[in-house]
Length: 280
Ligand code: GLN
Image 1 (tube, rainbow, N blue to C red):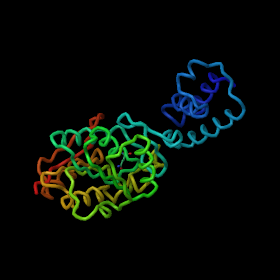
Image 2 (image 1 turned 120 degrees about the horizontal axis):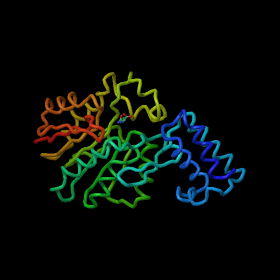
Image 3 (image 1 turned 180 degrees about the vertical axis):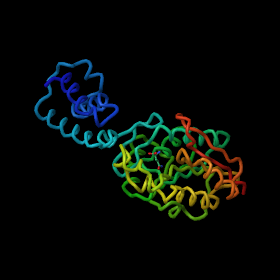
Image 4 (image 1 turned 90 degrees about the vertical axis):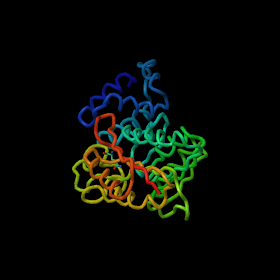
């Protein structure tokens, strides 16, 4: 079978299960052939050998059953960085780049800022900040040892040395008396009853990275309450949250004593990141 026909057939096979059937087919074929997409367009008549055809079918079948393309390819781009992702990590979302951007703005006047990232997963937020601010000192934590291993591989591949990664249940492994200028987190925030947990890519992602209590606010609330113990005076807390949680999160921040509390929309116009400054 030729490349052109393989893509054609695979796009049809994926049409019902994926909104990006053709792109998925092309990316999976690139993986099988060990080539980039321009190769597919340059050599549409090249024949696949039997082994390549068989492994293409295996990947397609997994995609047809809903396995996220990021897990099949083993990577996802975030903030211009190619990040390894596995089923132990959430797949980084473009929306989360807003959190990175707001964090960079909050520390633009600081030299060598200290930053804590809670629930780092693949390391996306921490690595983006480490890349943008080589002078920063970062600590990134995750409860999952598997996720920390993925983040460590990403760190090594990107050669970013201003970041330390540790297994930690929220703040538990933060060295005593450590204080940070910024604390950032994209914690689990989906309601445990939300039907969205049982749809699309999300079905395959770690539940522990997604849902948190009946209203999805348990971990957000815990972080809001606990972060002041770890913030420098005038330090910032920045949190990603659900599209319908802006009001609840900003209220919790204000009630806990944060000032300059604000909520920002993502590219889709949904409330997505709230932040506050802790005065003392
Ligand atoms: N934004 C993700 C989603 O809606 C959830 C990420 C999270 O819970 N931190 O699928």
